[in-house]
Amino acid sequence: MRDEEEATDGPTDPRVHPEESPGFGEEPAGLEEIEVSRDVTLGEATPRELQATDLGPVADRSAVELIEDLTDGDVVERRRAALALGEERPAEGVVDALVEIGLADDDSDVRQFAVESLGNLGGEVPADPTGSGDVSDESLGAAALEALADEDPWVRAEAVVALDRIDRTAYESHLEAALGDDHHAVRRNAAVSLFKIRGEDTLEILLDLSTDDSERVREWAAHLLAGVEDDRAERRLTEIAADESEPEVVRSTAARSLEADPGKFRRQFTGGIENDSADRPGESRLNRRPDL
Image (cartoon, rainbow, N blue to C red):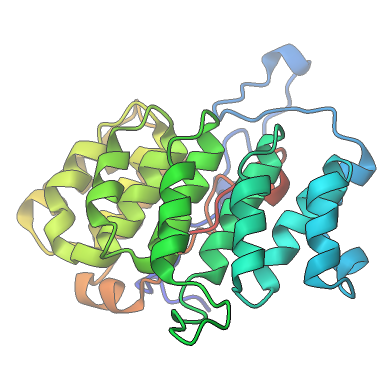
């Protein structure tokens, strides 16, 4: 049985409790009566493209071969290579390929996977003054900052994740600036990272985000307010839980946060979004659900 006060990595997925899902028990007469309140994107990806995150086909390829795929492969091969290079030793040639080739790719998924790999490489091997080719977190961070200005919002959202993994404290000012991004995923990821840095000192930020235009940001603000022991946090969560104009997922998240123990929540919070309710059809890793 799940501990209701346990701090999870994200708002509980409504699919875990189907009876609480919007539309449960209803019999729509036709598709036109079905309301979609989340920004689900229906694409036209081929089966092969949908398998681009499966690294099995490249498991035995060397870093040199992966770099060749990233340079000259088709879009699926480039995506796989960009992800697989994040599993390699963070040597200079690997990082250079991700930055100079991956982040410059015309395909936004390749760019997102490249910056994801840069984040995965962060902290693995410190700078090596002997000149063995190892890279520093500073160079990885500089590359992630470049991606934070990408035209594609999901690349920017992944850049926030990368900065968090590389050294969230060092890039705190950039993470705070990302709260002003025009895309909900960037703002959400920035809020999660700042909560990991500041804990209860994110109160003002979370109160502000609890009125964000995006229901996903409001959902995460309500979730993170569970870790703030303050009367203002409790009052705001009470308001959200009782607000009939809010989507059910936001209200139920606020209600759960009211029942949580703030100290226990902070101790157990890891900041991931594996259980984010954004994980719906059309929102798999392939079409850019950042993993913070």
